[in-house]
Image (cartoon, rainbow, N blue to C red; front, side, top):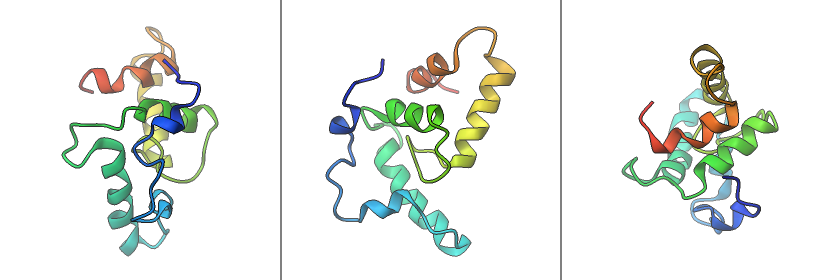
Length: 109
């Protein structure tokens, strides 16, 4: 489930162009979406169907450590919080949060 060195397998590991800062979009609403969309394309793939091979590990790291900033596993802090709330409402009694996160790319939500 959780690769000990998942960062070494991340699609963005050697990111130079565009800069790695795209994973920390500016708060300016006019610039946020464009920058966040670039970051999310690395996480989900340009067509949205070929996610980074360690997307769920990245996402779990952010959720498990309550990361407050940046795009991790294709989701912003708000989106991660919404995902946790969805788990609490719908899946808490049937699976752990970690199991829920790791099955995300295996089924449609």
